[in-house]
Length: 387
Ligand code: EPS
Image 1 (cartoon, rainbow, N blue to C red):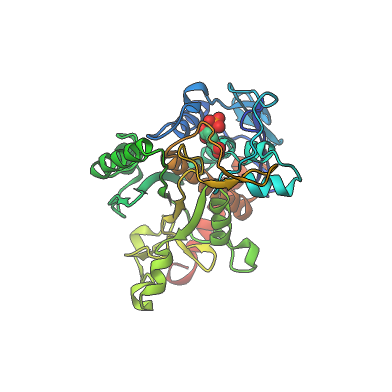
Image 2: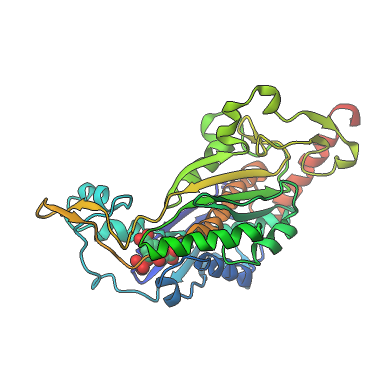
């Protein structure tokens, strides 16, 4: 079966997070050091709170891997929580506006928001990063690279060249604590977070993921649920605190005429062997997706993250037992988790592209997938004038 799926389980302060991945092919070499370095990157970034000084996230493969390679069986990854104290964590009865507290407590018929907040916590994203980093080990075999970075924090907007290579973006991004390739903006972003922290407030921002080397034809226009743009938006929109997702120009496309939105097509024989098969665009306003399918250009997805819901200063709320007005509860939290979100969005985008790659090229093993890819590439070369 080639349907790639990822499920997670685990509470923020439970014993561990668990990830179950099914539909992953055999014979993919696991780059465990790199997976763990991505987990560490997710823990970092300027604006994180005390929890990240406690945790040392590491992926432990409990199933589906033997001698460093996948076996084709379901894969289980565990990430142990050091701050494991679920049964002694205090109840929370004054829901934080913006968190899952109120809706979760009502939904599960309790006045204690603890169960909902434990599962809704962004700690869950460690599991999605582990799964996405595993998927990246497969994407690499196809020459596909996904990078994530911060493009804005609050009103501070970074300027990031559309034509930069992943190596350039990675080097610039990793040179500052804001995970943004724009060094000058990073300093202003850090100052903005520092100011919010002093005020007992929190800040959000915008993150971007770019996938390079993705060939034309992943996803489908045949059926709405197979459309890759919709699947990417669902995956990214489900990341904790994300309130907006756009592909390519996104909302800006609505303001422009068609001639300033669509990406003209030209043929360049020198690029025939590449992901565009020579059907080149000089702009990428579509963000690499047309009709629910990849078009050979980089896939570009941006996400808006709202500020963290836990405010030191609190907000007006209501006690769920007394129904009297109360300031919302304060739990130890982050002031800004936008850098962490850039790592998460990078990996959920990578995972969805990997799922689309599995659907297109199928097979039980990496070798069969690569053979199907070669067959597809050769068949495309036979189209049109090259036939
Ligand atoms: C979170 C609250 C904080 C964050 C947490 C998300 O955790 P704690 O309540 O233990 O201080 O640090 O994020 C993570 C633990 C993580 O791994 O990203 C929340 O309420 O969502």
